[in-house]
Length: 110
Image 1 (cartoon, helix red, strand yellow):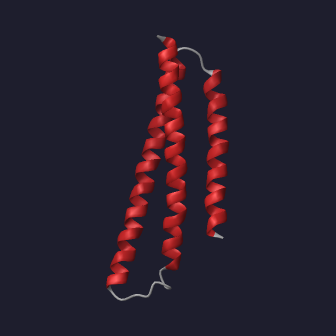
Image 2 (image 1 turned 60 degrees about the vertical axis):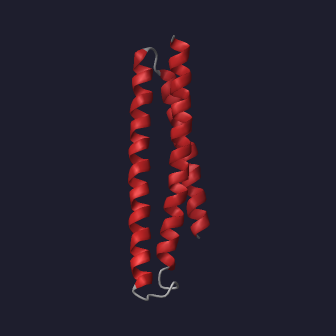
Image 3 (image 1 turned 45 degrees about the horizontal axis):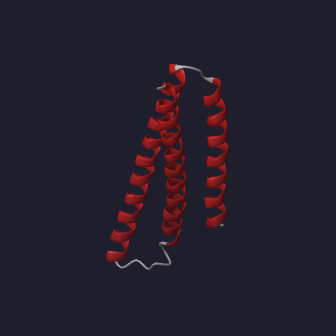
């Protein structure tokens, strides 16, 4: 079930990237560069918030384990970390692609 959720997130990111690419191609001139920059900023923000979520859940798990809670009880929290890690990987890949495209666009404009 959790693997399916992670796969679903990756498919969603592929769809989002495809739509972003189509939208970016519609822009011309400086507006396209500004659009790239805004998208990259939003992705960076999502990476930061997802990373924070992972750290919060990890801290909670660590605290519970130190209190003597069994790992079986914490399986849902481990699943959350797996899902968020998958989301984070997808976000980072999307960010790398967009940053690369931004650099390519900028170098082509020079």
